[in-house]
Image (cartoon, rainbow, N blue to C red; front, side, top):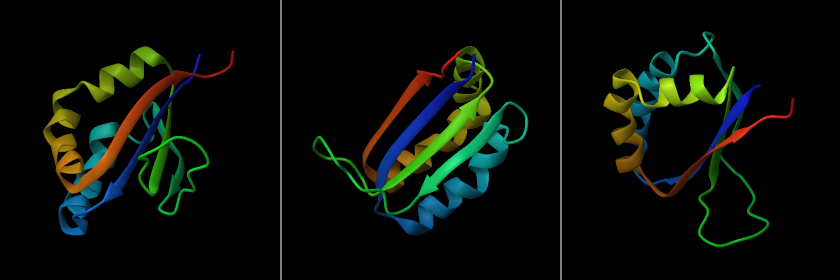
Length: 98
């Protein structure tokens, strides 16, 4: 069953965020079990409080594969740049429909 990682944040440091984006694709294994489904730098918050303006949706073959890639040393080596470059960030991992 596919799984989706939904990440939302406000970019505060574009230079550091650019460093993250340059390394994130290879670290997340784009094309090898991870697919960029949506990237919206102008997300519209309809409910809740404190969401950022940018949302990314990634599709993985499974929840296990998503966690394997997210927790890998390769991705953990770069994710700190995103966390430092952004505020109001959150990430959720959800199962897709069977």
